[in-house]
Length: 318
Image 1 (tube, rainbow, N blue to C red):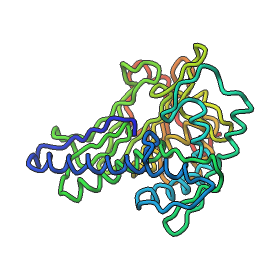
Image 2: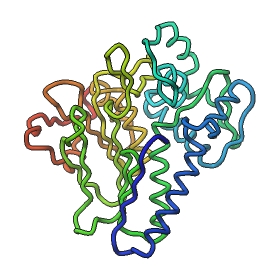
Image 3: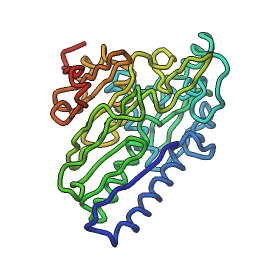
Image 4: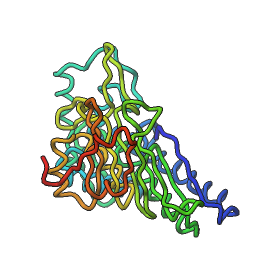
């Protein structure tokens, strides 16, 4: 799915490490064949080819992820919308060639006609995209779902202490060998060579980060983020990175995308409606500000030089 996966295991089960790692690798490959937009033969690519023609019977993982995507679309008031795929491709992402010029307003509006997660028909484990030109991009949820599946696989195999990381979508179990909670560095969105601080991650918890520094296009010497606001059809501005702490990786992955789209001004309002998640937002401003909810503040240790920029984000703030 366009990313690097790592599995870190404690030394208590060395004889199982190779077997379990192979199982996780096979799991990721299976999900890649279903959920990746980078493969022309994937299930989601076949969905796009059948758009406006016929419903498609899909494997269980695709069915579950699309139902979860609908759920998060509702919770996020449409700021998380997997049907944004046509606009994503218009901007030169999702495996398409780079652009020489900005898409026109007319081109964007033309593709926005296909963007609405509520139009996806999910029935009897078949999926139908009712209009030719519709497509889904599961990049904001598939990696988190894959991490949760791998987490269950490791637990089922009897592994107690491990960390799974799929392109910044992380979930942990137990503790590392040195006996403390897992420590996860949060990358500085303005300087990839350093972090802005560390988060202590308790067993079972998940963390996901969405940042404009990971994937982008440059058009006419300007940089545009790969995260598209499905309401406008334009790359998100004003947000440099978002990190979400949740009880499962699927939720963390999805909410990191929706909070990135919302930005700081809208985040407080939606926090009142979401399940228990904590969020850290770095706006695209200087000097660096780090806004985080009280739950994440307890687990976050900022770099000393950035501590004055740490501010509390409350559900009442809008």
